[in-house]
Image (cartoon, rainbow, N blue to C red; front, top):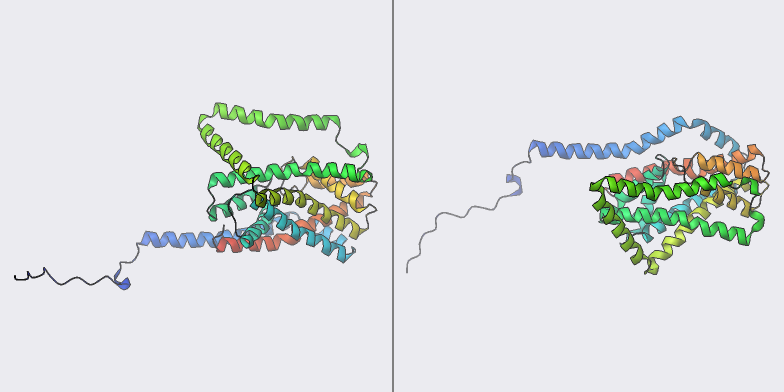
Length: 341
């Protein structure tokens, strides 16, 4: 039997050097993506500069008043601020069934804390968190449901804290004159009832929103039920949600003690909890504005001199906003560079 000749020698395998270069359009897209990433990493620093220019008086006055305060109590307040990042990371992990890397999760909350002071109603913090969850492979529906659960738990966790202070430390409760009057409570109840009514009307009128809304509610309810069957999730969820406002209140108490405010620690803590609860419904960047005014009025209700109450609020903002803002922006830029956001 004769062997038939082959049609020709086998062609050699293509080498990497022989591959055609990528088209110019793909190269331009890659260059544009890298440039956009670098610009996004610098955007937080630009926003930081704008924020400092707009509110420079608060920075200057707060720094001047804090120079005469007890530095050790101010350092304690800064420590409570850093512990607030840990509490926020616990709540974020407890609101998601997926296991998240602890280091990146904590870094994302440091970055989210900085973004939270640039946009109202915690939009900045939630946007950073959703982006982080998507990068970790969490579906968008589950990430959105975790944001809703996070917000709900953080709002509900203040109620048992306030009740605990009323029962355990009744002397810490301010006079009735600083509590909301009947008209304010009526407006608050009306707002609570109006929100679901407005959502129902919008869904009834805008038909394309029905299916996404129903999917979101279904995912949120399923995840919430699943999370509350796992101690490794609902314990950090509720524990972190209760610890977060307490840590912020401890910052106020530390600053007040450093400045010599003539109030006890429970009174300062309760003042912040009451003020933040009363002003939490007003959308403002990081709560700045409504919480400050409510806290000054609450401290004044304890017969604290107005100048001293104002200095306490300024010191609280310096420790919780201005000092963490620069490292938070740097962490945000680093996460963008690493494509973790």
